[in-house]
Picture 1 (tube, rainbow, N blue to C red):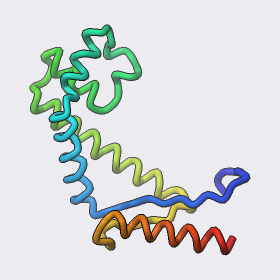
Picture 2 (picture 1 turned 90 degrees about the vertical axis):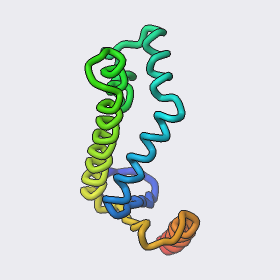
Picture 3 (picture 1 turned 120 degrees about the horizontal axis):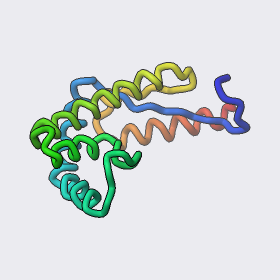
Length: 131
């Protein structure tokens, strides 16, 4: 037992083909940029937020601040956000693999998210009533 907690924990991790995962991450970054992430970072900087603050060290913020300060091009900043997001996802998966409680769910085995949700609910019910 890794943690001594007084609860039954059911721990699911959704996984998918790495190429698909990386495509989704890249697309998500593009959507964040389209939704105004750059403008948000510009506004935060105007309000006095700096690169020294922990809140501005998150993926996306620090890269766009580098762009705003003329350290990298906009394209390079966006590519860095994508790369660092992919690296972070890889580290998360590595961390989850170390936990024996995790039940891995391969999203590629399901046709949509509703099927995944139904699988988790049924699995949870089965475990709950057994244990």
